[in-house]
View 1: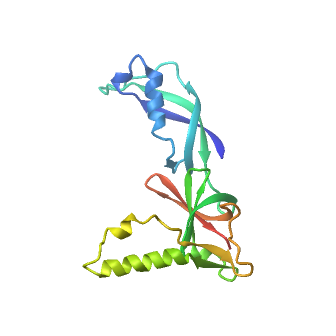
View 2: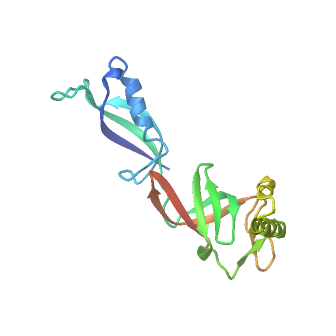
View 3: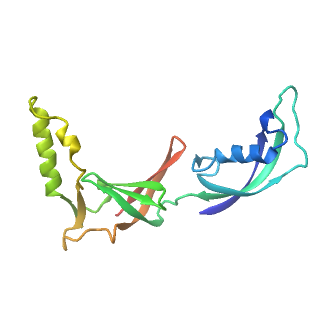
Amino acid sequence: FTRKTIEILIALPPCFVGNTMQGIHEHLNCFLMKYLPTLDGVVLSYSNIRFSKKWGRVVDECPFPQFWIQTDLLVWKPHVGSMLEGRINIESADHIGLLIYNTFNVSIPADLIPQDKFIFQQNEKYAADFDAAEDEAANPAGNLDKSMEQPTQAMGEWVSKITGQSMSHNGLLRFKVASYHQVNELLSVTGSLL
């Protein structure tokens, strides 16, 4: 997490004449929880709004008064190679999904999990339920909706090849940030256990 001070030009719609701060807040709220390439991170909050100049200005025929403001931003930017901890929310043979800070998704693909130390152990009940659902779907006379009524089962988990114990500790897993990239103003993080 870092704090950054930015200066930005805001053009306020005429509906905010007489309530400039509300217009500024609405403009800044559009940045929250989005990845901004200019900051190379996700804006979590803003504070300490101040005007760079005492007055706004109207340029040519544009009815939107423009204000230069400064504000402090709290920005989250993962650093490649840093160690983080997340809560596992899904495990499958091809990846582990985690949630960090109860907000950001992380995916650890199977090729970034050391195969010499860990193996995916499929939940046998899930496999049996999945096979039964496939058999029912293949049988046109069967009830296709029945498989949808069954509760979702855990697919399985990644375990140590030596001890057979789960790789997570109370659902938490430490990992290394392998990469991240922007997807539709959101940040997608890829982790590694190598």
